[in-house]
Image (cartoon, rainbow, N blue to C red):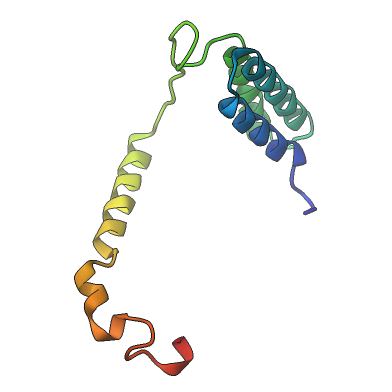
Length: 124
């Protein structure tokens, strides 16, 4: 166990995943309520106000989903997430840069780019 980390955050995230994977409505609602309870526990134990507010928001969202407010089921009302345009632009630039630097089939066919062929012995 690492010091300084809130263990209830990981538990709440696992409960949310369990809720997403649930096969029937009763199990899904129960798992969302459990996730909300764990987010509340994480918020109670958090020292930073910003994180405490974030965990409280997660708990409220999980309760709303337990009551049928999920975008996929229920009343059809989706939760909106605000995105900062600057962050969206930065994410798009990172994605474009990773595509530009991704190796192509031609790169892999070059002798120096294949493991074991032309590479220094310590790399093999």
